[in-house]
Every structure is written in structure tokens, then in C-alpha cells.
Amino acid sequence: MTELSNKRIVLASRPSGRPSAENFRLENVPVAEPADGQVLLKLHYLSLDPYMRGRMSDAKSYAAPVALGDVMEGGTVGEVIASRHKDFAVGDMVLSHSGWQTYAVADGSVLRKLDPNAAPLTTALGVLGMPGFTAYAGLLTIGQPKAGETVVVAAASGPVGSAVGQIAKLQGARTVGIAGGADKCRALIDDFGFDVALDHYRSDFADALKQACPSGIDVYFENVGGKVFDAVVPLLNPFARVPVCGLVAQYNSTGAFDGPNRLPLLMRDILSKSLTIRGFIQRDFSEQRPAFYQAMTQWIKDGKVRYREDIADGLENAPEAFIGMLEGKNFGKLIVKIS
Image (cartoon, rainbow, N blue to C red; front, side):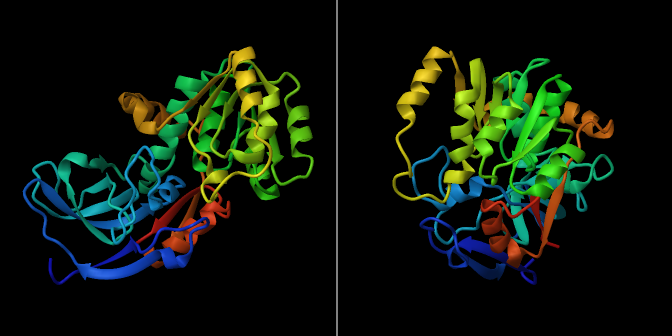
């Protein structure tokens, strides 16, 4: 495969605060040959997700950071163009974690074969992939919504939040979605079936949230933090559950956070209201994946769960798209069409 050239984006430097184009570097390198048990992939789609900001930092976390000079990591959909693995043939489409590049060698043991006739290939990176599974496992395992309860969802127009809201509705809950801007809020009602949509940019957001939740909040699905969490906490009911899968409002922060220290008040509420606040990584619930694939596939087929994708064209545009995502500029699951 030496005649092929692999275009890849590597981590050039670690950002301080908001990432910039200078933190990334585009390279061209020869394509490697697969060894026994491996395949060579031509990558078609790349997933961009908020967790990648954490991988750019060398701060202590639940996963190792991307090393300087290494390919930025990310989920990918690719086509097998050479195989030395008995279970994969040329032309097979697979889900891998090959990162920001055009070609990749991967071990067959870590690949999942995809059926293009069952669902669009891009859904393996979104509603039928890690974001959808995050919503499914976090909401049903930690949130445990019940019929008639109020479920509030942050970043509700994104791939995780929109799935959370729709799954909550399937459980009979009342759903309040929070998003940024009129267009996203309109989609929460028209496309994803939320009962109420609130724009977190409005100056009276906290008061509006209180009015939208006259009986309080039973489940709050957290993936933002910041002022949204501040507005939610006073409204949490006794025995409320808070699955925490992300804090995107804080990912670009450096140093101490602005405002007063609210931890003592939060700890008081946790005790006095018997709150359950649990952070999680979707892989914590990996044993639920088969049930998730079965349930979500059927929900999509039946029209009970809808999804939206935001496609950026060209690997070279991945850094700009990624930076914009951290600022809420995307609408739906952000995917890069590589080829």
C-alpha cells in the first residue's frame, strides 16, 4: 500500500482554554500494511464529540491524553480495502476508533461490522453509536424516569440530549429541553417531541425554567454544567436523579471558576433531598449494548426516535468544526465526511 498517502491530523500543541487551529497539524504519511489479524481501512466518516477536548489536555482524567504528535482520536466508519483477518472481507463497512485520518490499520478484534441496509452508516457514530448509547444507558440506569415525572435535559438538541428526551417520553415522562437559540428550541418541539423548550440564552432563563417545572424536577440529564446546572439545582425534587455525562460549559475553562462557591449549598441539598448525582462514562454499561442496539433500531424503524446530523465536508475542516462544536455552533450529531 506504499502508493497510498494517508492524510492525518495530529495534536500539535495542547490548548490553554479555547482550542485554536494552531493546536492541530495536517500531515501526509505513507499507508501502512496490515499484519495478520488486521485490516486496512479507507475511512469515510469521522465523529466529532466534546470528550475530545479532554483528550487534548494532559490533566488527570479517566482516559489517557492524546500524545503530542499523535493522531487525534475519534470514532470512524470505514471500508475494508485489504484484509488479513478471516472475519472481514474487502468491501465490508465497519465501525472503528481510528481517529482523524483518511486510512488506518486496525485489529479485527476491535471492529464492528455494519449493515448499510439496516441503517445509514452515519448513525453508527450517532443515534446508534456512542452518543445514543450514552443517552440510553445513562437515562435508564441512573435517571430511571417514571410515568408522570419531569425530566429536564441540557444540550437537548445535540445527539445525546435529543435521544434522552425521546427515550424519556417513551417512559411516559414529561420532558423539558434546554438548547441555545430559537431554531434549536423549535426543533426540540417539532422534531424531537419535547413538551417544553427553553433557550438558555434568555436573560430570565432561571425564572423560565421554574415556570416550566411547576412540580419540580425529578430527573436532570447533565452534559453542560455552568449556569444551567445552577438554575436546575433549586428545583430538584426529593429523590431526584442526576446522570452526569459531560460538562461542556467548563471544558475550555482555566483556573478557578467565576462566582461564589456553591458546593456547600449543593451538598446540603444532596443530603436533605436524598439526591442521586452520578457521573458516568458510557463504557461503564457496556454489557447493555446488545439491548441498546435492539431497542434503538426498533425505535428508529417505528419512528419513535428521530435524529439529526450536521455534516462537515473534508478532513481538513475537522479542527474548525470541532472548535465550533465546543461553542454550540453545530446542530445535531457532528460528523466529518472524509471521503
